[in-house]
Image 1: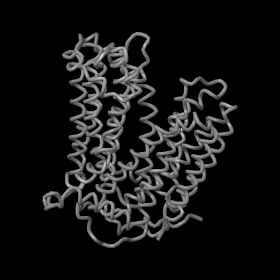
Image 2: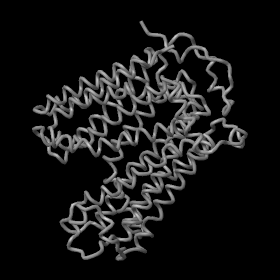
Image 3: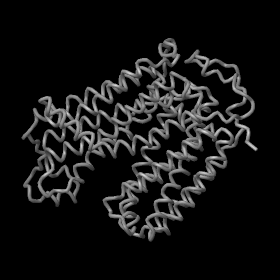
Image 4: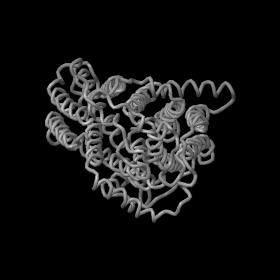
Length: 478
């Protein structure tokens, strides 16, 4: 028997202070949970616009990183020099804004037009990518000298052959700066996208909408990294036939994807009221404190957020451990760790698809608990399956599927339970917490695996998954 869904219960007739649109009217929701699937959201033209914009924007995000690697290999990597140091610097530049500006961006999302943020962020990122080839050309053969004393001790010893300074190509510093700016803009785009979904989708369809967004996100991660290099090579070849440099040809692919996303989102109608943004606001820090107080006072949203933090911590650790895991599996090389990540992404896409089709029949905390326990079982199985390639791939796919059963319902709880005027603050804090959760395991997982071995670390992650299930257990449905 299907379990009744609280999101389908009639809500108070209080009007949304931002949107007058009937899609946000929850009073028309049926009292009995219905297997609605993806049909209602796919028939919603406003959601389709946001979804298509998401596809092009996320594809550009993924191919952007591939473009950075291509530019580094073509201009800055020395002969017989590993590229990992250069790429690590790019990844750090991409990560720092997420930690620094996540909460701040969420506050401003409540103060600004969501549609405006979605459109402008994509257009600006597109322009930034367009100017990269020109800036690299202008800065070629130029370097900047920095005192060796600025380096940490271990790097200072590595640079001992240089007397007092170390030298960095100006073009690479430009790439770092543009990546930092691109990531900073992304910190505004991400919460604006999450806040927009409940403005244009009926509350009872939020689970399906989030499932479709999660499926798309994972698909773009797999597709973007899989086709990124071939796509850029084709673009470079076409660019050369038109008299363009290979850098310009490759950059055009990413830039046009961002620009196309921005143009598509111009046609999005969110039903926002101008007067909502014109009223006087408290200080930004006070808004951040309001968001923290709201999370302290609302255990449902707080526990859902904690579960998401644990989920992303586990996957961040696995992204590091995947290389070592691939190295231990017969028939797989260390550099083929992408197969494991792809299986995890495939599992998440399958799980999101299942939730979008049948998830309305179950309570969201019930789905989260099943997902958390399923992740724990998958991690235990993964720790004992390293002698079999197919069993490892199966466990990784199952892990991704169970992760979707955690992530999608928890995200839906946060969206549906948070008042409209608090969504930006809460999603900003969520992005901040999640990005910190992504950063710490990246630094610690490899060290822990070196010290205690792969299996104990995987079993520890399984215990962490069970802990996440306890948070889910206390999200009581009304």
